[in-house]
Structure formats: C-alpha cells, structure tokens
Length: 401
Image 1 (tube, rainbow, N blue to C red):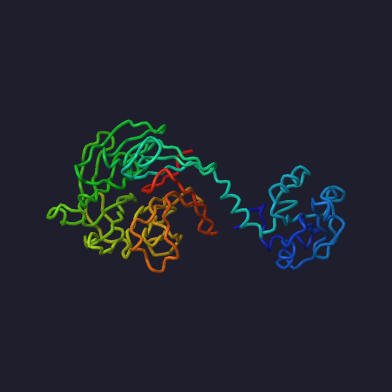
Image 2: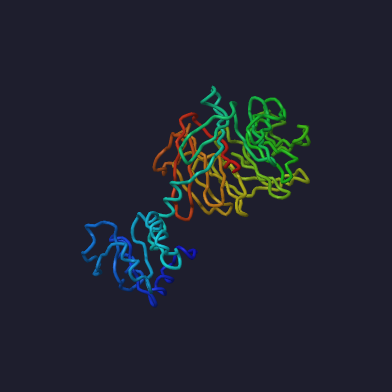
C-alpha cells in the first residue's frame, strides 16, 4: 500500500481533478504516467537547459525555478530516475512531499532498487570450512552490506549461530557450543559428546535452554545454558543405537512455543545411500517425543526458521526458500544454507555446490561462489555478496543494531 508520500495511480488521478499537474523531468516516464492517469499535464520542468523552451509530450518545458512564480493549484509529479535529488530541490523550495508533490508510481521499482543498493546492515556469517587462519577459512565473520567489507571475528569450524538473550551461542564442531557476548568475546563453553558432529543450534524464549542438532548421533541434545549441563537427548530414530552412524543427518532447528522443528536429510535414515527423502520433523519439547513430519519431500533441507508467523525452510539442493505449504518465496541457482530476516529483506547464505553432478537437470546454472544473497520477495530484487574468505556458509544472522 502506498504511503501518503508515494501516491497510487488512483490518488494522482483524483488530485489531477482539482490541481494542475506539473511533471519534473522530460523523460519517457511522462508518457507512461499520462497513460495511467488519463489526464494532460499543465507543463514540464527540467534542469537541463537544452530541454527548456521546447515542447515535450505536447507540453511546454520550463526551468524548475518557475515553480515559485505561481505555485497555487500546482501538484508536481516527479518523472526522472534522479528523483532523490529532485525531492531535495523541492524541499528547498518549501514544497511538501505528499501534499505538493510525489513521484510517479512507475518509480517504485527504482525506489526499491535504490533502497537495496544503499542497504546498511552488519550480517554475521559462519563457515564450517576445516582450514582456517586469522583472516580466512572456518569461523565467524561480519559482513557490512554498505561497503562489502568482511571481517573475521572468531576462528573455528563454525556452524550453528543463534541469539541467547544479549549473547550468542555458536557451534564450533571442534570445541562445542561457544557462548559469545555482544563484543564477540567468548564467555563460556558447553561441551558436547564426542563424534556428535554438531550443526544447528537454537535457544528457548528465555535463553535458558540450548538445543543442538547432533547428526553424528541422530539426535537433538538439550543443554542448560548457564551451567552447560546436559538435560536430555532426543533421538529421531533407534538406528544410531544399532550402527552408530549419521543416518538421518539432523542439521538445523528452531523453537516455536513447545515444539522443536528440525530439518533433516532423510526421514527413513538412508541419506548416505543417496535416498534424499528429507523434510522438517516436529518434536514436542515437554514430552521429548517425535510428533511427526511437518514437511516432506525436501532435498537436503537446512535453516528451518519461524519468520513473521510462518515456518520457512531452505530446500537447499533445489536452491529454494519455501514455506511449509510449499509456497516458493525465492529461487536461486546455488546451494542455500543460512537464513534470517530483518522485517523487509531475507538474508540467505550461499555455498558453492560440492556435488554438481547431483543438481537437478533443470537448473539453469550451478553456482560455485560462497557468500550472501539479500532479496525482497515482493519485488524479487536481489543483491549478491560474494565472499572470497571462505568456501561454504552454514548460518546467517543479522547483527544487533
């Protein structure tokens, strides 16, 4: 819905019934705007001296300063891609946006594009790459979308990342769950069972309990945040007790009220035999019992999340962000892992495909870059940040402002 400053076509048409419409910017946007509102404007103003004195779209073109000569009954519609500087000029002339002028609605896409280009967020990204040094490889990074600067904060084989009150919990596969403060200093450590291969992590609403996806044990480990004490372990089947293998590949999870939603590669426990019958499993936290599949038929899913009251998951091998009722919100030709949302944009981690031979034959291309994709689903506008410091991503989290 348009704000009072960015008018709809109906609003501009209504205004044109009582005011003289002046267009700022002798461009093709005028003809397209006239087609929508069905009215002839009074005249055009343009900063280019070469345009002043000519006629454009059947109207005389004047200098913008003439707007001050007789502004009674005028309403200015901006019809230039340089709308931002024109807005500033009109404000200097004491015109009020929304009351005295607006932009043509045709510029809404341009506005959305400009907003995405000027996005200023700090995004935390984890990489589980085994190799690491002080600047590259596995660890926790901060990416600035404003200047594309990447800074390594912590070194380690890092996967899951979640908020825990004013702190963060960070899975380091070589050490356990590291408790990190707002300045990214380690303040505690939860030790995990040997060979559990920890992946995703989540906390309850009160930041008292930590849930860890443990694919090496086909389980979710439950730990007390303050003490690191193990509270419970919930197995997704009895297969691990028999063969001590990663059968289901439990990887990410989120807490919603009294339920855990866990993404895994195979419900039947046969992913190592390339049976990718993956999905999202619901687990009752109070009863420590499996409720059943919340979503099926996913191919190597990750990053199950609850955003704006909806459960979402990355169908990673298909490069899709989908809701639990299979509404596709985004499609990308890369392996997806890591998801967050800031109220407007989705932030999706991308990793290069390690097994390109397994990619769907219908894929238009196969991405090999790692980094971040920021996108707005309504406009389908995307912005990609390729990061050369690492080769894979597990978690993405917009940093606290």
